[in-house]
Image 1 (cartoon, rainbow, N blue to C red):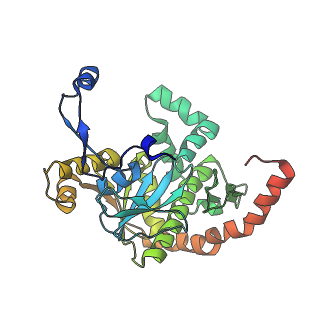
Image 2 (image 1 turned 120 degrees about the vertical axis):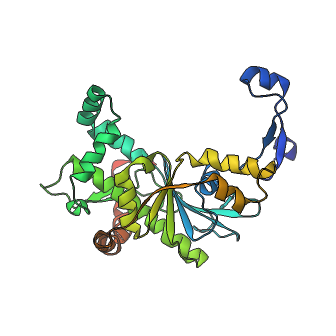
Length: 313
C-alpha cells in the first residue's frame, strides 16, 4: 500500500492539531482548542478504570465482553493476535474478547423478555431492572444450567467452528434460570481469559475493575466476584473509555505530570463487591469440572453440525 494514502501515526498524549474556525462554527467547540491523541476505546477504558498494573484486570461489560491488563512488555495473550498499543505510550493492552458478550442480555430481552418489557413500559422502568429480580430468584449455579457464550465464534479462541451451548436442562428450569446462566457463562468465559493472560505474563490478577453498561447490574457484579473469587469494583463513572481519553489529554496538556498522578486524581472506585467464598467454591467446581471441558468435547459436533445443516460460516 502506498504510504501516501495512510494517516500519520501520533502517539497518545501528543497533539493532533487544533479546532479550526470552520469546525468551531459547525460544532460550537472553541476555535484553537488543542486536539490530543488518545487510544483505542478499550485501551482508554483500561486507564479510565484505574488499571495501570498487570495485576489489575479490567473487565468491560459491553456488546463485546473483554478482560484487559496494561503491560510494559509485548505479550500475545492469544498467539498471533497482537496486543493493542495502550493509552500509555510505550505500554501494551493485553485483551481476551468474548464476542457478543453483554449483547446476550439484549438477545434475551428480545427473545424471552416480553413480560418484563411490557411491565417495564407500564411502570416506567428499564426492563433490565426487572431482569435483576429474575436472577435473584435463582440460586447460584442456576440449578445445573450451564451456558457457554459463543453465540458468535472467535478467530482463534474459540475457533471459527464454535457455537453457543447450554447444557443441563431439566423440568425445574425457567426463563430466570436461563438468564442467570447467561451472566454466569460470561463470567466463566472471562475467567478463562484471565487465566490465559496470567499464564502469559506470569503475574497473577488480584483485583478487578468492571465498567460498561453491564456493570450497572448488581447481580452481574456479584456473580463476577463470586466466579473469580476476587473483589470486583465498578468505577464511580462507568463510561470509562471517555474518561481514559480525557486522562490522555490531561497528561498531554500538562495538567498532570504523569499517568499515575492523573489516574489517581481523575479515577475513583465506586462500589466494591466482595466474593462469597462459599458460593465461589460451587462456581469453582462447575468451572473446573464442567465449563472448561465443554468446548473441547463439543468442538467435533460443531463441525459436523455445519456439514449436515449448512449452518452459515
